[in-house]
Length: 101
Image (cartoon, rainbow, N blue to C red; front, side, top):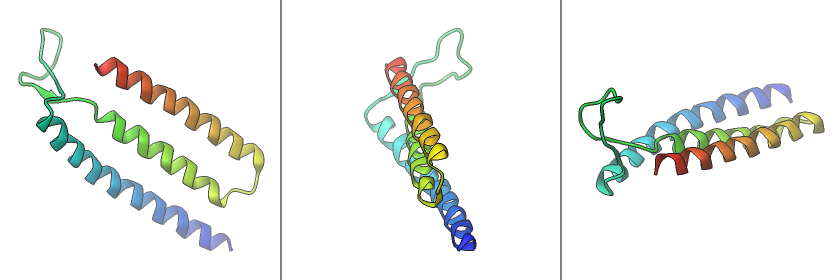
């Protein structure tokens, strides 16, 4: 039974990695098309406009990964901590989204 959960987490990790890779590429294409860009100024490191808001993909997939990892957990205390971490991560996602505007 434990070995099944080990493979579940390994599969979940790889699925998260690959979905992150492809969703980030998709987001960058959409950000370029819709002109969601950070314009360079005297404090920035880039010289040309670059797409912004890619953190939305990272944090969203982090939350999904954390919620899907609850499946194998039996302890209610750990599950409640994960839900609290996901709630805080969602607040960080919203703050980053509105900060990029």
